[in-house]
Length: 122
Image (cartoon, rainbow, N blue to C red; front, side, top):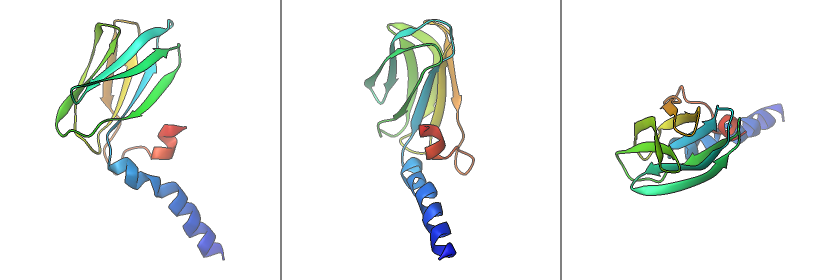
């Protein structure tokens, strides 16, 4: 019985990571002291609206699948320093704004060193 519970718990925690490994993701945070209006991602020749981000707020998104491309974050029409290479799967990016015209991004890690999906969603 204990083995079945442990197996079920591991499946519940690790199962979603199969989906996680099949997609690229981004978490965008507002690390500044002012709201960011019209936070936007540009990826795979698509515009992905994130809406406004209050100070301390963040948004998590699965990226569209399109192969090799770059990811860029903007606030309204203001570009930031965040332009980073991504592919359709297994690229997990952390991006942030420090103001409406400044921001940056880094890779969040590649498997097996990437954070678990459940940790990213919470």
